[in-house]
Image (cartoon, rainbow, N blue to C red):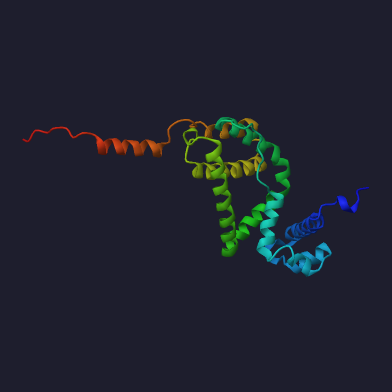
Length: 222
């Protein structure tokens, strides 16, 4: 048996948090987000209200933690220095591998999204966290891939990639017959199809500069 000294200091807190999240998940399945209170979550977990407030300052923070716990980001595996097409193939493989686990949380996630749509404060939190995630993703891309290797600016690319992942995940769950593996790989390959080509915005900027600096042609007055 492991000694007490071998147990990490944060282990008890992590177990408490996990128990509270499991209890919250059960209650939300039974009665929805609107009717689930922190006091009920604590009672279901067999804990005091102090335990839950020691981990979550309010309901919205608890709901956001549920999303982090049961719908974590994909973790594609690719080598350092991989090009964009290789990265996209890795994302496709990671999405396919994550679908069975995501199936268990899909309905709850949709319910949570509906709750956020109806509550401005919750939507603001989702916006803040999502924007911060996009910024971090774009910053990483700029260090991992040359700008000219991307099919679009990094900050746009991470948004499009996220939308693609979310859409394909739910389509795969809802109609797997229409979204087999080859369709998912094809979708990510299409996103990488323009990688290495000059981005339209950059082309337009160069064209504008050329037009402004081109020498004027002599004209003959009529």
